Amino acid sequence: MSGDETSAHPGVTLSRPLALGIAGSPRRGGNSDTLLAEALAGAAEAGAATDTLVAAELGLAPCRGCNTCSRTGECILGDPWRDVFTRIDGADALIVASPVYFATVPAVLKVLYDRMQPYWARTHVLGRERPVRRPGAILLARAGGDPYGFDAAEATTRSVLAVLGIDVLDALKVAGLDAAGDVEQHPAALTGARVLGGAVALEAISRQSG
Image 1 (cartoon, rainbow, N blue to C red):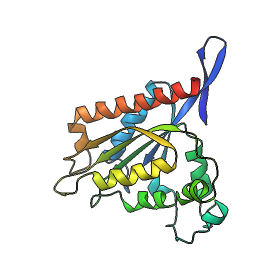
Image 2: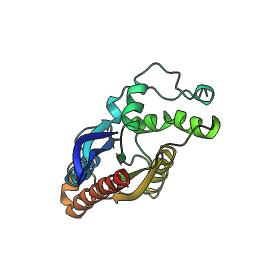
Image 3: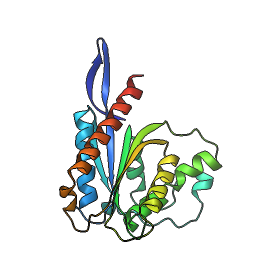
C-alpha cells in the first residue's frame, strides 16, 4: 500500500504512502483534471507517492445488478475489475476529481462507482471485516446555471468513499468553469486543491506512522 521507502524517524523505516487520484472526466486535460493534478502535486510535496486512475480508460462495463457479489464478495463480470480494485486497495489515500454533469458525476465515473458494490456486499451482507480507514478528498468542477449545484455529485461520491472506508477531509467545489482551461483563471482554487492534496498526504503519513 505504499511507494518508495523513506526514513521518517531515526531507526524506523517507513514507506511513502500512496495517494491515488481518480479522474472522473470523460475527457483529458479539462478543469477537473487540472484540479486533480494540483492536488497530487501537493500530496507529492508533502511526501506521498502518487498515481492516477482514469475512469474513462478502465474499460469497465456497467453493473448488471445481478447480486452475485452478495453471495461471493466478487464481481461476476469478466472485465479488468480485479486490476482496478487492486489499485484502489493498494492506495493509502484517495482523491476523486470530477466535473458535474446534470447535477451529478459523468457516466464513466458512475460506472466505476456502481462497480464498487462488492465492497458493500462484503461488509453489509457477508459480514466481512470493514476496510482500513484511509483519508481522502473530493474535487468538483462545474459551469453554472443548474439550480441543483454540487449536491448530488458530492453526495454520490461521499457514498462510494464511505463504502471504501475513506474519511473525506474536505470537498473543494469550483463553479463558473464553462470551458477547458477556465480553472487557470481561479488561482485560489488551484492553491486550494494543492493544499488539500498536501493535507490528505500528511494525514496518510500520520496514520502510517501512528
